[in-house]
Length: 416
Ligand SMILES: [Zn+2]
Image 1 (cartoon, rainbow, N blue to C red):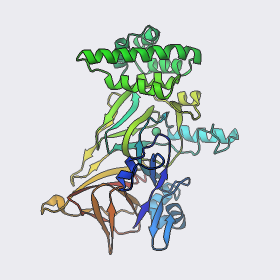
Image 2 (image 1 turned 90 degrees about the vertical axis):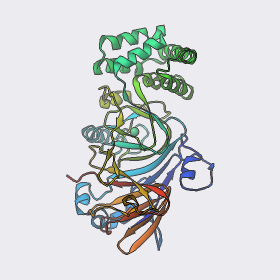
Image 3 (image 1 turned 45 degrees about the horizontal axis):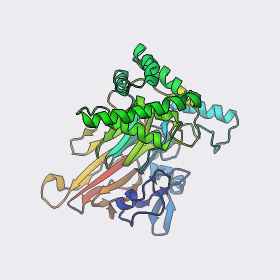
Image 4 (image 1 turned 120 degrees about the vertical axis):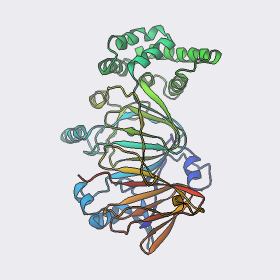
């Protein structure tokens, strides 16, 4: 068991305050801080804090996969930590994207290898042969686009906008208000010649402005967040087909503790907020716009799931011990939230004991301050910090050192 120093990633969409404040450091920072990675990703592994100094978690696992990961995990996932967990702080929208299924990733990886596309080439879609399911749990209010909205509601949105330029596209959905209609419409938008896009987009943005003005004078607040988001994306990415695509997606605001699970083929974009995110340890992203990076439209169309998603927010489950589980089908990871209390003599203030499993865990403290005890060892875990518990360590116990504290427990989902 060791404290774990995350690998900080500075992307332009990051925040200069959120991650520094979470960790109790001076803010604003010089550069935007977007992500803090806790994992053993070869590109940027976290560092264990040891008496001998910082040691790469990747190297520690490489030296002793059975001891660090446990025998079953090492066998199932090829001696690699199968998940990556991170803090994420978005100040600006991220790219519109989807991730492949396991079959699609294996096929795509083979195909691009056979075609001789270098693994680090900017046009490379598949940098490994893994799928990349993602789970994001909000720490603040967290805005995102996730999955296709039910077409009937999107038709209402188009009718509210009332733009003549949208009429032919509205008819596409009215003729086929299902996954097929969404595929037809999305495909025609994402493949529109720039000249056609430059005619439709300004008309749509004008219609959004007018609809927002009407919403202010009436009490009809329907689609207000959707309209604001489309306008904001139009400002960040003028002339980008992804702005039109945003009209088709669920616009969600997670409250702290709420989560989204992004399964293979789910078209999504994070817009703003701070979150804990856990995913399979993969880099496979197909982008659909809202980015200066490589966009491969045919490949994106191949992996997208056009089935409408009526309720994109994940149903969390409260377990008998009071902890909250975010259930997903991903074998690579599982995430549980533990809310601790101290100071009173009730059951809730007793130490929270994790069960003994021959698997690794990463504990992330997001609120308060906890003492983590495993056998003879005890370590303090502060807000914004993380701890590595190897499979061979005794099962840890968590005790809140503040009035209350919140810890996320990241672990492997299943070795079957
Ligand atoms: Zn994603």
